[in-house]
Every structure is written in structure tokens, then in C-alpha cells.
Length: 234
Length: 222
Image (cartoon, rainbow over all chains, first blue to last red; front, top):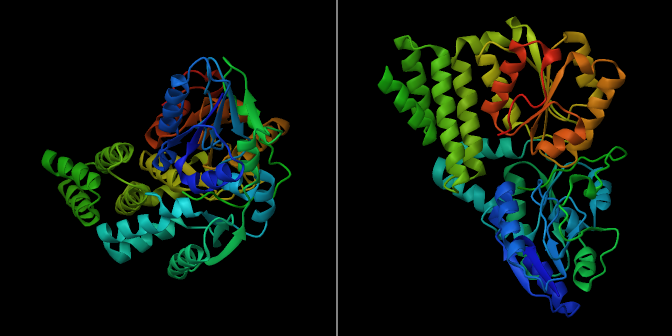
């Protein structure tokens, strides 16, 4: 038996793929807001893993490395399967390498529908900031937050309707104009999610045997040849 | 005086920028030590951190706190003169391919306010610039900052280069940002910090003792 513990931020994409590949795994969702607190996310993940019983063969964690949040996790009875990705941005871009290739064009602040709509979404955070501090101070705060970025890149995985994408791009354009950044759509992919939910856990995945802990080196960090310039969205 | 200081901590905690500035100026006029005032601001910032952990505050609030802190530093005499007059003991910078610098800027301000000379190399700093700075200044501490997973490899490259240049034994390397004990081991650093105040403690600790006898496990981890 396989159980999926997944991040709510990419719920739409996961459910789309689950439906497509007729995945019957049970899903357990972790709140997007936990990303702001990687230690807390790790703690919550371990709690959920510990709830899984002896009849569990695999626990699929649909997260990336996510700021050390998966480090040290272990299951007594099941294998832990984790995409070998830095975070969900890499996951939706099709891997760390694709992300590196894209990043040669300049620093991008990546946005997805899930992030935009979450409590930590940029527009949500900006509006909250304006309510609290007014426009002038909020603009100062966001200039600090966005310092060094060249553009807002919206990842289109093809699951959002034209209308939804159009609404998103309107919102992104407003932010881009306000902070003098470029904005564009870049093509995403659901390939890693597809493999995840089809049980094709190949070299793009970390597989940790029962009783073993997730270790830092399993994620194969090797950026020496890269021209990596992008930065994850927060 | 006690009242002013207590009000200052609360004003920072509630992110009331104008009140903070007013109270700092008032404190300086009353003869309160600049270091005490910075300590109060720092106490207020710690409370901001707690409120963030409790999900009462958001990332924008953390940035606002750092902006308030930066503004306070411009009012403190010792900080203003520090860059040119203090002997550089710490080299700090955000490593290549990363541009996150809020924590770096705060720790720089805290160190300077305590009379510790800091050279800030900025953000997206290539490895050779760090290594050259260690060689040229003889600073005892190298602070490498990074929030991205990709920063780990760059940190490792910098420390490898220090080794190859026979400079490693001359400097204690402290990494900060999204780091932990595993990252510290991987990159080959001496200390890791994810809290600015703790970073200052580590630096003071290193500078008060002989560098060569400094044990990696001497200082606990936040």
C-alpha cells in the first residue's frame, strides 16, 4: 500500500495528474503555510509518517528538499519516496537541471497558481502590507523583498483555464509594473508528478528504506557547473 | 530611563517605526548608552521573530523590522564611524547566485554596533572575492550567507579554495541562512547560525580566544 503526503500548494496539479493516471493512493495534505517554517514542516511530516501503520509499503512525499524540511525523516515500516528536487518550483519546471537552464536568462521570482492563492502569496502579502503600513512603506518593504529579481515568471503547467491564466497574468502585471520588473509565462511540466503517481520512481527520486533517515547527500547537490541565477519564490 | 527603554522594546515589537526613532533619539539625549538602545531594539526584534513563529506576523513584517533596525543604526554614532575606523575582523557576504541579504545586513549592524569591524562584500559574491578578502585583511571570521539550496555548493567551493590556498587555518567560517548541522558538515564550515544574535555571540566567542584552539562543538546550535 502507498500513501501520499503532499503539499497543498501544488494540490491542483497533483489532483489533475492523479485523475489522469487514475491514481488510487490516499492523499494527506500539508498546509502551504508550513513552508515558511521548515522545522515545523519537518516535525509535522514526521508526525504524519509515524501515524502510518505496518501495512504501508511506501509513503510518497510530494515535496522537494524545501529548505531542509525533509532532512532526517524516517519511517519504521515504509519506504519514503521523495522527488529529488530543490522545491516545488523545480518539480513543476521538470527538475533542477531545467531550472538551471532557465535561470541563465536572469533571476526570476517564480509564481504558480497555488502560491498566488496561498496565504503567503505575493499579492496577498502586498495587500496585507498596504493595509497595515500604507503604500509608501509597503513599497519600501517589497523593494527589499524583490531586490535583485529581473522578472516574475508564471509557471503554466497547462491545467489552468485560459480565464484563470488571464486573471493571474493581470494580477502579476500589476505587481510587475509597481516594482519595475518584467513578467512572462514559462512552460511548466507535470512529468515528475506523473512519474510520482504512476509509481515510476526512477533517478529523479530519493528512495529511503524503512528505518533509514533521509540524508542530505541523497539529494545530490551539484551546482558547480551551473550558471544558476534564479531564486525561489517565498 | 527604564521607561524609555521598555517603551522602545514595545515600539519595535509593534513595528511602530516613527515611535522607535523618537524613542532612540530621546534615549540618546538622555544619555542612555547607544549599545543599550541597540540591545533594546534587538530585544524588540526578537519579539517580532516570536510573533512570526506564532504566525501573528508575516515576511513583510520581518522586513519592516529589519528596515527599522537599519534606520536606528544610522542614529547610533558608533555604527556610523565603524566602517572606516574599525579594524576588519569579520568578512561577510551572500554567496554567488544568491541575493538574500536581510539577515546578513542585520548581523553586520549588530557586529558593528559592538565595535567589531566588518567588511561587507555584498550579495552574489564570487568565491575568489571571499578568498582574496581573507588573504588581504587577515580577518579571523568569514561569514557566508545563503538562503538557497544552491548556495551550499558555493559555500563548499569557497572553503575548498581556502584549503587549497592554505588560508583555512587562519579563518573560522560561519555559515548563515537556510542552514543546519548537516549543511555545515557538507560545506566544511566551523559554525552555522540561523539567528543573528547567536551569530554575534559566535563571533565574539571566536574573537576572544585563540582561533586555532576553537573547537567546532564549543558553541551549541540554536
